[in-house]
Image 1: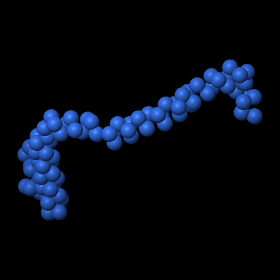
Image 2 (image 1 turned 90 degrees about the vertical axis):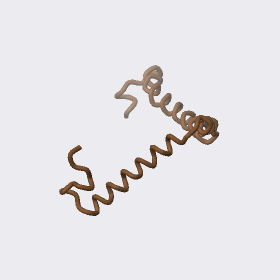
Image 3 (image 1 turned 45 degrees about the horizontal axis):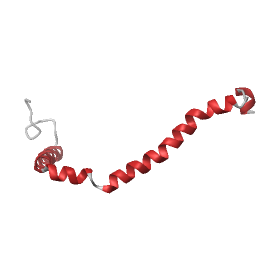
Image 4 (image 1 turned 180 degrees about the vertical axis):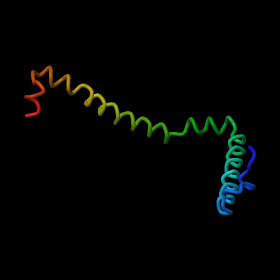
Length: 87
């Protein structure tokens, strides 16, 4: 990279400072990810809250999709046609 944010002429001083803080945040995130241990990953996987939220989400999503996907078939099998069903 020829121009780094600190030496780029097209950036304002505020943008240069912002880019430095973003790069520092990225470095901190990499350090934090490297510091995570398998124990913390196991703890995250056995946490009850994400699992209960995902079960709740899919238990609400499944009936909505079933209703919206199969309702046209159910209506047509009941003998209704498109012109009769909408009037």
